[in-house]
Amino acid sequence: MSKGQAATELIVILAVVLALLGAALFFYSDINNSFSQQFQINKAKIVVADLSSAAQSVYQQGEEARTRVLVSFPSEAKAINFSDESISLELNSGRKAYRYLGLPLTGTLSLSPGEHWVFVESTANGVSFNEEISFFSTLKSFNSLYLINSGSDVSDGSSRALTPAELTYLSADDSSLITTDDYWPKNNLGYDENKYLEFIFDPQLTAENITQVLLYHTYQITASKEIAAKFELWNGSSWINQSLTVPSVKDTDHAQVLNLTSMINSVNSLNEFKLRFLAYVVPNFNLKTRHDYLALNVTYEQ
Image (tube, rainbow, N blue to C red; front, side):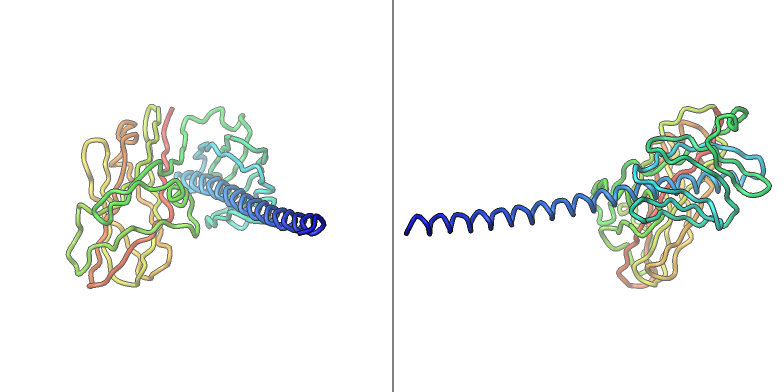
């Protein structure tokens, strides 16, 4: 082989290596960018969910009810709008986190990245949002939203810890859901107490008095078949059964708000609170459930 030929082959090999390296770097950059965008939209969805829950809480309490909620805006936040009875948080990428509440909303918030206290008030004209501390000077009632901190899927009889991604899916009412590992008992055999989903909140709240506890739950079924479902609620001393309304059409969100104030009426019972979801299928049919959103909305006095 001549020196000229060897040099040419070396140049060709180096060119191929550089081309492969460039393709790999482009692929990595694309994956990294996609992950970053998903992180930003997930963070935006949590902000919208927190503001929505606070708005619904004060609206239910009536005019002049007030609360505050701590939110952390994503670094790519571009605009937040309270209009058409909904909350919309837009990112620089053009993606939006959106929630329709069905009640009049007004407000203006700064969008600097990081944590902000947002003050929420029920008025004669609906619900308003602002960041003025003077608004809060006479406020003694607080509101906090708690999401799932940990959990496990025991639907097949063996315990598997929920992954960080699954916990994120449960933090926002959107199209990201978790599906049970196994089918629920069927043929109208009733609940199997050894098969369930367990969710733990771990609020670690310090307060003088609990005045209201609301549990938000959204889930689906994988087949349009009749089921029964319940929560088993742990209040620190005993399990309490709570029957649930159930979806009738597959792959369709079924949302329910439970008032747990009579069951969780102390700071200790709240901090030790956890729940289990159980279900069974009436006909002889294989069916799983998909879970979208679980959150505790707690109003308390400090």
